[in-house]
Image (cartoon, rainbow, N blue to C red):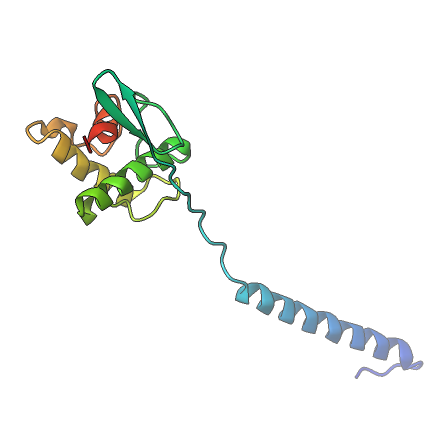
Length: 146
């Protein structure tokens, strides 16, 4: 404790300073112990739509058959791709088609799953094995089960 002629002001200031330092240290510790935010996951709502003699699978997030969807993107089209890939992984029992989660983020796992699907959809056309879902890959993913 620091002493001065009155004593009380310095003592009060010293006590207040200790309280602030303690609160700051404890507060920082509590923030450090807080659990990290968990990633959002989505539920697929599968349905089949028939057009002519063909049936198309939809998962409830996007009905596109043409818009390019690729690594680095996020959102509903990515969720749709991940749902379709998960469906096929379960349907054929092949983990190589599994995007390892449905989180709406087109990352490496989704890209690898798409490339494996493209190899099955276009076995003799390696130019299609690019990991992007576009006008040729969307219809393949939507019809693959038939």
